[in-house]
Image 1 (cartoon, helix red, strand yellow):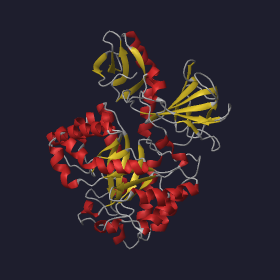
Image 2 (cartoon, rainbow, N blue to C red):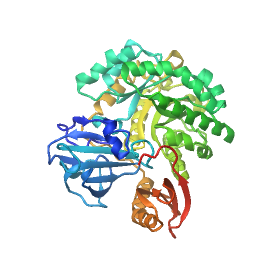
Image 3 (spheres, rainbow, N blue to C red):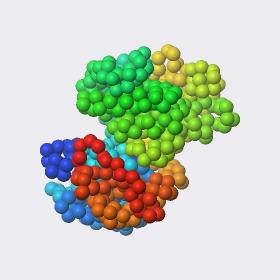
Image 4 (cartoon, helix red, strand yellow):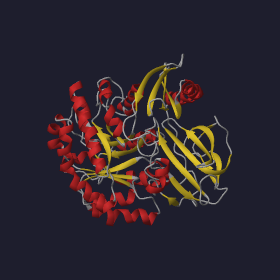
Length: 514
């Protein structure tokens, strides 16, 4: 996602979540976007591809518009003029408006909001999320570092590469990151990276997951001191949960969901956002996603692992183009959407080459005669996810590895310099990312917008207050959220897309924040 304003006008005058007391009057936990200080008439660009919807709200946003993308909607508010029309398709970087000072505004600025789809209306911000991780100041690559151990070579690699995100095991000293790596970002004029820690708990996790929700408290107690330390040093408020839990049966998946959902709540009470699941290659089983509804509703991020190998798999297809191990998240996303469940934004918490997929054990790219193949593979994978708004980052396994994983460590390998150069040089402020969204995704967006007016009309005719958006679920149903006055509650509605009768109504649980 690119920045909507020119480089000279990117100072944040009010961050996401600010002034919670003031925003209570709109039933929000705080400021639902970011305010960017700029003179009236500053050109505003679309942050991503999508369809335009022009709006006017004199008491709040003033003149504003939304851009509806495949997996995200963005808002641009307090405008002085809009230069596109409703229903117009725009691409990332298209001029769409001029900034202004309309609506409830105390000075010229652009209010910019990001809302992942489907919309989580009960997250305290009516579905809006912090735009900062989506923008990253123009960073194009989504490759992140994955650090197990600290060394002088690891430090040197990180300072040369300037990754947009860093994943670190908690055995790494966060002071090293703060005092030695982050100043390199400042000197280069780069945004500081998104950082998240992972505590190694593989020795206790299986037993605790088997206990379901009861085991979540013990897992939280085992990690909280380390995660609090990382937050104290680096301000990290996003953390990884358990790693590669394998569920063979429906009952296993149900217990895992209970464990994850409870753990997300416990860590949320400690002020942490969660990267849930961190599922191994080919897991969960596609048929098991139906058991993870509560986890998907509560998690801030969904963690997945993806590994390939430069040989053919059992089906005789190159893993790079066979979406069972690599790019399998696309299958997962489609299953989750078909279920009608919320889809959190994804972080690929491990990506790389893994010999275990072809039965030769934990072997990595260093065993190859031409290690450059792996760098080409990483560039290919990065290209696949750059234009996909569902994916925030993909953490390379590894960039600073324990001896056991030496063959997978980019640091000190033949590709060390090439990888650092690629990551560093991919940063071009203001350049739109490559759009690699699937044709099927675009068709789904078109279908969603096509049913928007009909779904709204059907809601109003049936006595509901329209919630403001609609989603197609296959060809048969439309789904939306609405207020049901007769019951004084918010509901999700499933409507037959031919008769427009309500075929299912589900109460939205949790605090009512709309």
